[in-house]
Image 1 (cartoon, rainbow, N blue to C red):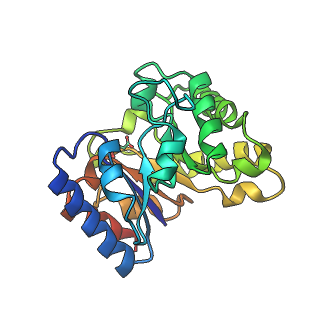
Image 2 (cartoon, protein in one colour):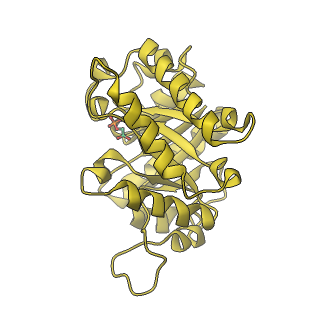
Length: 247
Ligand code: PGA
């Protein structure tokens, strides 16, 4: 099981970032769960370069630019040199700020070229009776993977995060059976984009109002390989509860 902790901008103090990192290191050693922390960029610079633990780091975003004269941008190359292994791309909160599918495809291309593993976020804003949201999911996956070679596509992690379920309480999270259906659908789309049985090895995560009270039931039987957790990952006790529940 893979758990990615998306701290967003919740963690506002260096001391808290360090405490969460210590908690994650302890849990990564005492359980079989693979833990990836996605802190804000300045904390990456603080925690990732000297990291020799089982915990891996993800950036919450990456520049679409290659580097050079791009004030304020953090390129894929800079992330790699900091010791970062993953990058979240296409999170709905970034899409809401105007990030287009073209920009996402560009970010995917630069990231894998530098050896970063992209965690591609996809998800519908709402569900319609005619299941048009399935077409949207297909398009989001297809457009993001389009610039990648078949080999590069094998390094991608997919995070299914329905927008209607993000940042709410656990009762608003997706139902287990609906999640199972979505995982199957995403795997079907992936099987059309990757050679042979390679798509079966692409991790599919779920995100959206996951907390210690619902993570176990979401994991059981749905076919997900892990979770992308926001708010509940930013408190040491609740993060410990999350990891213990799936270990
Ligand atoms: P949430 O966020 O766990 O706070 O709902 C998940 C996400 O947006 O990645």
